[in-house]
Length: 133
Image (cartoon, rainbow, N blue to C red):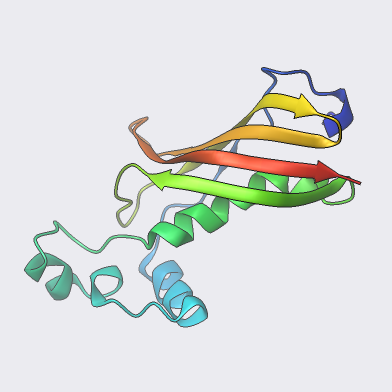
């Protein structure tokens, strides 16, 4: 694994593939976040809302994107983080997280980040600014 200082614009971090989304993941996230909207945990409520089934919290997916940077916390920290939600994440979806270095200005590294499902569809897309110590 390269250190961030060695990365060139266009280089990607190692992809992270999450385990299939489980109901327990979403129940735990609801408790941790305080977001108890039943479309995230109760099938019947999701169907009443016009969904084919329960969907993951968008912030669950966004939060998981930070796992791309876990190996680099000795080198710095996430200073800024913004995303757009592009698609829904359903039970049993397998999400792959990706980051590509877009720009380097001094000790600030700007990455494009992306979460895609098992069909290759984007579900979250955004930007992370990583500040090196």
